[in-house]
Length: 120
Image (cartoon, rainbow, N blue to C red; front, side):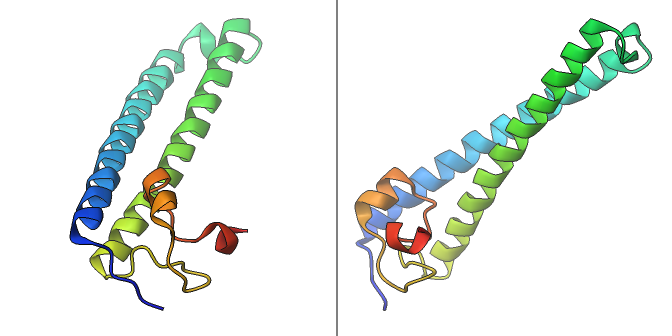
């Protein structure tokens, strides 16, 4: 099934996707800088000793930052995929069911590529 979104709707959703892309890219870059700073601080210091309590805290913080960075990257991948579908004229159509994705869902999650039913 195909569906043509109104030009104004498509432009609005394209802006939302780009804003989300920019936001996620900034977050990922921030985590990369923070992780590099943490690694430099730990390498060759007393914090690199696993028996040092502060070293354990820093290691836990690094693991949490890596997890958050991976989550942001996963969302960015979804945004890029949605932008690709938009470029190909497939945006707004469920990848699983072929049905139109409701505008309200796209407004809430502009990177959605499935209907709620298709996602389940």
